[in-house]
Image 1 (cartoon, rainbow, N blue to C red):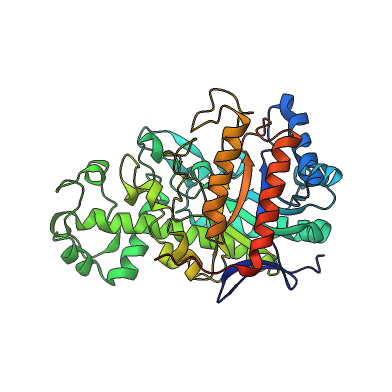
Image 2: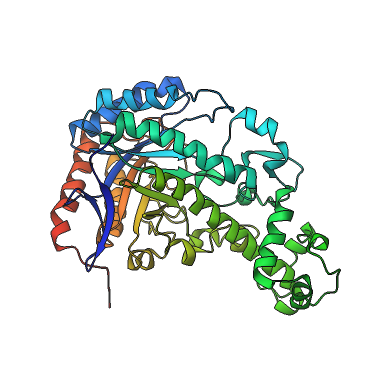
Length: 428
């Protein structure tokens, strides 16, 4: 069991990553550790380079399959991952990324109606965030995992990063494809509960919607696909004609926010002395979704930024205009997040010159280009006192070589040196 306390502490100079009583430069390295065995050596080489250059904060993904009832949990994959990393980097402190929304195959077969359903008739591999069965089972299995990890590796764990939905970023799966989600049966019951809490009675619902209907909640259904996709006035909806859909969009975002808070609360209760963060709250990027930001689930940051169960939030750097010569902008209102005492984490998944030529998203062609882009990104988050992790997303050797790591180590040293003079970002 860990005796070390990691936390995000906010003062007049903004939120900081603290271990014990010491402020730490919040610079991490993430490496994908899944699949593609031909890249296994490259991944381990990156971990070794991080160790050699004094980058001790690592973010790594873990695999954990929920056990069947009355079965002994199997933590072997999670243990093997952690032990492999610590065998190479014994000084590492780990931020563990754990998917909380992708149940094992046996669970999906037992509860097929609780899995996501899309407008093309296909089921997704993720549980519906509207499923009350998933909401019942996820916290129990999170507790099993965290209790095990804290007892075995607690001194090496600084925190947890629960993920879910599309690419783990807690916006509705497949929405970037233009697919419509939330057609599974648990949506009906959850939507009716939302309406009951908001309006109190069916009569008030029908009045707000300018419609007529029976005086019972069972007669109320979510909007049809046609209703959800129809916009009566250019880019906007009209309360006079679209109140039902507006309520449904509010419902979708409330459900996602409550799901994020649910899993973060489970991690925080199991490990109260560790940091818990989540991807959430980047409308600047998700405003570009085919069906608009209302379909994202990311529009209730005002709720989550006040949650005592969440210490920080994260997003990648914007995928628009991020390459050499570009802006490399934030996806979110980072300064607002910091004003609420939560720390923002930047996922710097720059496609370095060591990535494959078809990786896209502003890929850097040379080492000088790579260093320039990383330095630009560093300037953004360091001046905001934000956290970040350099990311080899697929674990294919995007961050290799002593020359690149010497540069990264210099950035870490700069951050460490400016910490004592850090102030909230307040430009003219």
